[in-house]
Image 1 (cartoon, rainbow, N blue to C red):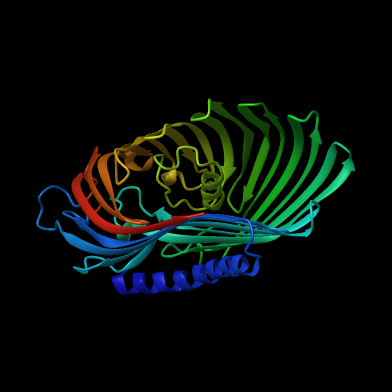
Image 2 (cartoon, rainbow, N blue to C red):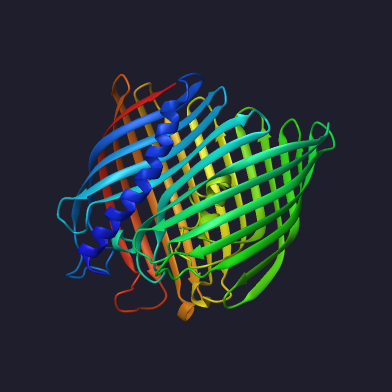
Length: 446
């Protein structure tokens, strides 16, 4: 697709996603301004890259570029009467000063607004997820191999008491799923019914029946399909440990195939004292890219360092496992994450792949005005398409200097190395890139 067409697609998606983002912001503005907790930062600065196109070796096509950046980071929780709202946002607007690529908006926005029409019994939910998907696994991840997506959904949730310890719950979601470049737009209708029983104050069980109906928009390559799921779930909470397990069956039907299989998962969250915690998640599920992204948003198991989101048409099966450990002291913070996944497509076998990622982040407060951090990350992608395999390593350092109230000067330096096991013209993945950035950051929290 030529650059002009890509730029037009970006503008179209910005309009579509912008409506949803403004709708969520409007809900936040309409709710009373009580009980708001937020962490906000705004920044502006410049990024330098010595190989922005991630081309192979010291070739004539290697391009340096300087990028002007405006960024917004916001986490927000708002509870006011019948309103509940939450936002987790990390957005950057990038302007390529040497015009290597078109200007772009990238990052993530995950917003949720709930209004209790009848408290504890009937509420309406609006949700929006904006982010990026990696288009082609065989090509290096650059702005032309990265597309924005926006998943918007809304619907009711109903809870009907059956006994003092049991409830019958219904939920429905209509979703509009939009992509910037790939012709994969779709609409989705999800219906769910569950019976929940509280055995004790700390143990609850439920039986869940779920239906997903997906229909591709006009001109979309996304096939129409239905996914029916039934599973049992048990949640147990202790003073420091929470365990969630589920087991069931799912059946997928589309225009080309009928498939299905077992569904199971296990999640354990453990608090070690007041400063350390660990999380283990493993299981299998049948979903689409929309469900996969929302699964990562809601579970966040290793998502900071784990597999990159890749575009995948239709429905697929994921086997996943992740471990996250976090600890903090008055001056130090440490996070370690490991993530492994296998993707299986019955129809589009070329999208079958294994992805694994691991990373660590260390932050140290040296003085009241000086902080520094180190990051390291590894990712491996092995695709069934032509037996392709790719590895990427990265390491970075960050320095934060507080020079005025709520203002920091932030310096980042990062090094990236990519290696693949074979060469395809136009799709090579052997590269090195160095990046340096300098930003002024204003932050405030309440």
